[in-house]
Image 1 (cartoon, rainbow, N blue to C red):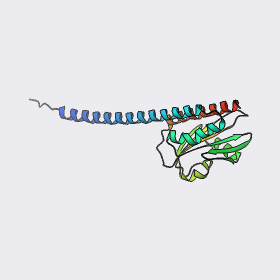
Image 2 (image 1 turned 180 degrees about the vertical axis):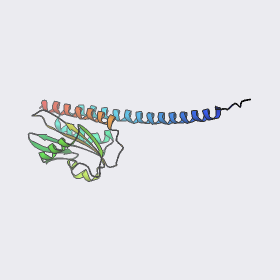
Image 3 (image 1 turned 60 degrees about the horizontal axis):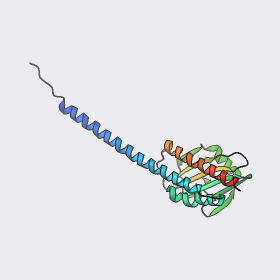
Image 4 (image 1 turned 180 degrees about the horizontal axis):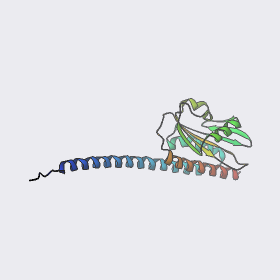
Length: 187
């Protein structure tokens, strides 16, 4: 007579392993969704704050003073070229910078560039040495409107979700560009 082999024990162990892997993947997906949802909500709050700005000065104050708090960042700067001159707008200071520096930076980055760094981009100015994660977002515009880069920085190296993060930051940059054009058209 033949002997019956029981596969039950091995099958149950395999199913338990698969169930554990599925639960782990599900927890990772839920954590990602919560983080993405939080980032999306923060971007929306930042754009709403921007929409309340009635002048370029108010717009710059929202970006440099309020956005770091809303977005959970350490530093936000704007590097703009207007009327052929380069400017850096950051918390508590508006400074001139070489237009070539801004134009060169624009030529070297994608529409949204997210990266960890040992030192932030020089357009961050005096705080560049403390920046370890940065997002550089192009702000294109047709002449005679200003164009430039939105710079977002953190002091800690952060894991960056390039695909979804780039979409959100692209929206943030497009919103900033539209609001800047609106403020300048109203002058």
